[in-house]
Image (cartoon, rainbow, N blue to C red):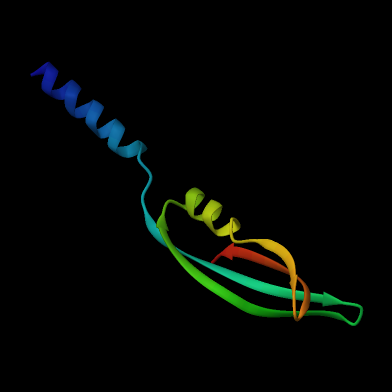
Amino acid sequence: MKKLILMSGVFLALASMTSCKKEFRCECDKTYTDAGGSTTQNYSNYTYKDNRVDAEGKCSANEKTGSDLGGPYTINCSID
């Protein structure tokens, strides 16, 4: 009986340590900057089914800077 209670306690402790996976929405904005100022527009949206820490890491991996026909830009992403 003691073994059963001990095993149940260990199982519950391990189960409580696992993080819950939920859907997190990542929104990215693209900002063009030039001598006249800056223009920001919605660039992309992603949905990650993960825990918050991993979803934030995946979301921030979409950030970058560069240049295209519109000029130099920065892409910033964040979890809603």
